[in-house]
Image: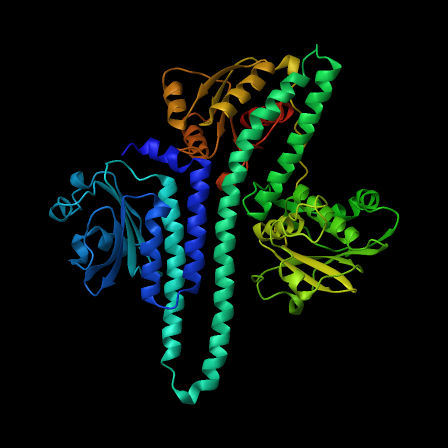
Length: 571
């Protein structure tokens, strides 16, 4: 199997969306499974299509053996057979509780070749199931050699986590059936509690799947927006441009900016937006928004502020928190068509008033309250669902509350909503208290476009369109550019004598990621400025002093990032 071609196929948007849809359906079914037999059948009937494999098996741990209980393959494998745990790949995966990838089964010494020779299997992935101990495994097989694609393994790994939850639920149900009649009242109470837990688990599984899909779509969309906005930015910078073209380009840029904002909201809902958490003075933030809120809400809405004077600083992203408050205020305005009062309060909150879902620690509480139309129970239950809106078509995206919920959760807090019809709505979000006070660094100024420092920039990105657009913007800033389609290619060029003024790299790339490349360069070339560009999660794993620019970006963002990266080296 050509591994790179398999990766491209599964990452095709239509095929990837189809397989995520199949995965979501399987997770939904696993959430309703009541027995081990149900779970095995769901895995047998769904795993092969989800992974795009030539065959799959479901293996159960049976004392010291691996029991191949089910399969779906283009030719017979080992259904019904048992093998010693220490001599089969499924046993190794369950013992080590790790995914086992084998690009060539006939070349791997761990594989019992005699069992595989009569079959079509030439490469495989074995995924363990169960926690804290693995009790089962899913085997995926291909008829050609090659490393199974990362996307296929990720899909199977998500399926195995859902199966682990389903197995735990089945154990709980089995224990309930063993209770005798004398404990009938307790059985009824426990069953009701279990059903609530299962419903929460199903909702959690669905939201995780939707969140992963949303994050991947947002990532791909940012990669498309980056060359669009970069090209428009270059056109706007031209000295000779007709009024008609200027109007058209401005309209296109405005649409691209709106698309960028929509992607940010999608990433916030999916809890995958790149954040810059730091200590935030909430009193200064809230009171500083007074004029903006007043102009956004109009004269029919009266504003009331009550912010504790001794409020400690919270850990958050100032820009995103401002957006969250503005979203909540606009929602409140729309719920008061005849006018009313919008109150914004902030305090430490009593420990007894904290929601049960909040972890132990110190928090601040922000309350946004209106006296508008309110929500009934059915509407309240769906309030934070993405794209759910009670507004007329075209009046809202349905992402406001879901964005706030995702942001607060990503910052380590939680969101509460209380509402009754004709009374109003109260939205409360809790944020962790910052351990350190906010610093006041000097603002970084972008380098003047007509006086850019000379030198060559190494641009690393696996997306050719993003790479080309970034290089064009850098050329317009006065830099020469060299492009690389992967981190390994970039390292080869550096080893061959390339001496760039700065390295600008994407984060999510096949093989070595941008974060790994930055760590490698910091160790081997500490004097070389580096900057990461990304529109997706994962950059928070980097040291906080690594300069980052979020996709999509314009020349000004690129110029400011370069100046900041060079300043880090000189500091």
